[in-house]
Amino acid sequence: MGAVDLMPLADNAATLERELEWAAALIDARIRLYFGQECSVAEVREIAPPALRDDRSAYAGALREHELDFEHRLVLILALIPQLRPQLLDPFLMRNANLERGFTEFGGITSGNHGGFWPTLETAAFILCGDDLAGRLALRDLFGPERVLRRQKLIELGDGQETHGLFGNALRVGREQISRLTTGEPHQPGFSNHFPAKRLHTPLEWEDLVLEQSVFDDVQEIRAWIQHGPTLLRDWQLGRKIKPGFRSLFYGPPGTGKTLTAALLGKSTRLDVYRVDLSLVVSKYIGETEKNLGNVFDQAENHNWILFFDEADALFGKRTQTSSANDRYANQEVAYLLQRLEDFPGVVILATNLKGNIDEAFARRFQSMIYFAMPRPEQRLQLWRKAFASLRLEAEVDWRRIADEFELAGGAIINVLRYASLMALRREVDIVSLHDIRQGIRREFRKDGKVV
Image (cartoon, rainbow, N blue to C red):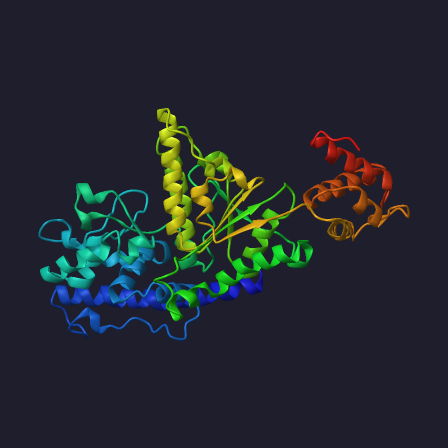
């Protein structure tokens, strides 16, 4: 980890330190008040949480973003204490001398691999309310599924709701949020059957992309929405007329820049782009496809990702006549997708080779449909020159002639680059030959059954 990376980590640690000190003061005050001991305050809410106005750490940013108040902040830091400073919860390990056991009102879990005291919602209720029954009842609403802590997956509840009641649930920080709240780094989920998407990134820049000006202008509309969409919806008060989110269809032959464009949109706007692997999304089991997609959409909503569906007609293709049960289930999946696309507040990009393969119900919901055509000779000339710019070439290589003679997309040109460079290395020379370039071109045409 470099020095630049250490700065946000240090800022976050300093903010968490102050928040932990505040939580420790609340715990100490509640125990003193509950047992009638001397205490500097008459009520725990007199102990103000740390100010955040000038705090630029990721943790403070999350608190401001979700507008967490006193109670929400206490619950969140309480869920983090076992991972940051578990000894702060040791006061709850005291035993009731009369009953020879722990205090039931403290809640918590003391068994399992943790070894210390793991707080439950009961613990939070005790700190915030003591033995105030009215306050305890009012607190139940704090943990509702539609309230911010659970809606934004800041906390996850265990299985205690049915067996031990709501307050028996262990307090745990949401897996999607733990990285941001502790190290300040964004959550990067691992690729799996449960999360069938991989982060898409590129070392290239906009100047490496060769597109028609009209296509580039259409792409910049998406970029403008990412940058100014919130202003339109909130400041210009168009949220009642314009639905949040932006949906775009990229279509055209393979290798024409659809995937690279999606990656550059994310890179230039500092948003993560996740490419959804449709081979893992689609399942033959009823309900599994919707479940897999739901997980991707849910995480994307919470982290403001761009979702990129390549070869999208495999999932967003035209619906069939419902002549069988399988057809009905397939159409249900399409209906589910339509709803998730409608409700998704971020950017979704679908890519396909043929626009006609996409169901018309999806097509009507796109804000833009951008055609990535095969490059013209002048564009192909740019692509050849950019691709081989760092290599030594035989004097016979004439990019103008090659660009005029062979209709190839950018992806195919990169394949020729790979082949011709490898052939030069095999011969232990550092000059790329015209013969190898032409041989690489022939290989690309043979993939489509063509002979040159």
